[in-house]
Amino acid sequence: MQGEILIAGGGIGGLVTALSLHQAGFSVRIYEAVPSIEPLGVGINLLPHAVRELDELGLREALEAEGVLCRELAYCTKRGQRIWAEPRGLRAGYLWPQISIHRGALQMVLLQAARERIGDERIHLGHRVGHVESDGRGVHVALSDRHGASHDRAEGALLVAADGIHSAVRKQFYPDEGPPRWNGAIMWRGVAEAPPYLDGHTMIMAGHPQLKFVSYPISHRAEKPGHQQINYIAEKRLPVAEEATPEEREDWTRRAQLEDFAPLFEQWRFEWLDVPALIAATDDVWIYPMVDRDPLPRWTHGRATLLGDAAHPMYPIGSNGASQAIVDARVLTGCLLAYPGDPESALARYEDERRPATAKIVTANRGMGPELPMQLVEERAPHGFAHLHDVISHDELNTIAEQYKRLTGFAIEPLNSRPSLADPEHWSRP
Image (cartoon, rainbow, N blue to C red; front, side):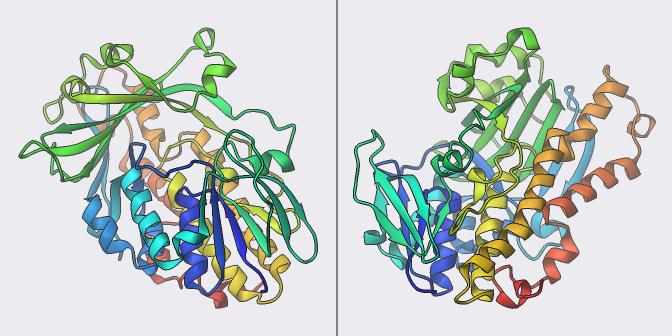
């Protein structure tokens, strides 16, 4: 394929796309709207199917050094009673770990790799991708700074829009789509230094969809001896009468105060975790609305396509947002390799594979995905239980967990045995 591949967005999806395409021999150029990429955000989980792809890019060692290998996922009631637990990552039999990590640390690992391999001169900060024109030979892209002042135009063979849930490219394709859909849930997110709970490698989800607390360690590096950096999400679903205004829903990241949500969890003191103490140990808290968008009928328009949150923003249920963007990047790479000299067919193959798959995940996450057992137990035993099997069977729990793994692409045996997503032989077949 002649010409450069332009990438809109220097977040996780954009940087992994750039690294993957560069590894495959394509010439890439990244355009990111912010003038400086900083290690912002809170914790995220990289599931084994995503870690496999990052391992193939030579990044596993750096990511393991920054994060914590998750060994177990446990669902609990609001009283701390265990509903379901399963081994995760290497302990579950995957060939790759599940890594809990600060989003900023992940982005810095990706950015450093991009600078070393692709070159700083191909990473254009302070450049927002605007209007896109596509013809049979390539794309022509209007560029501006984040305040709207025009830059020179860019030209390339393809454009991959990885510019997030508020994607300017998606908005050009679907100008009447409107703002993201809000489901009434508000998330308060923070990182605290605290002593390890359980084995120091466990992700827990406690409560139910109306009031939930999620926690997992993201770094063994802490100022206080014997402490970890522990990420948490405190979530409350608001009644319709309390819905925020559209303007507040679109205020994607803003600071919050502990008193805004800490009283909701004042009684959540378990034998193995003191939730109020963890919240009190936080310096900075951020508030997010839980939003997604409806699946699209089409991602690709000419020689421009969507990827990651620009294509399929989903509720943060099942730890799949970043992982699915990484899978997108690798499938796109494999498809471009499978159809040399025919980028239109490559983009069609990429979309045929990823658009239906991610649409199913968006829909599943709206139905609580793998967290459904928490709701079922709350409905059936709101005051607790003496024996879990009186409330929900092991078979029911296992079925929900396995169905979600297969839906999202990280069932153990298929993942361990399949070829690389960047292998062109995998995508040359119809």
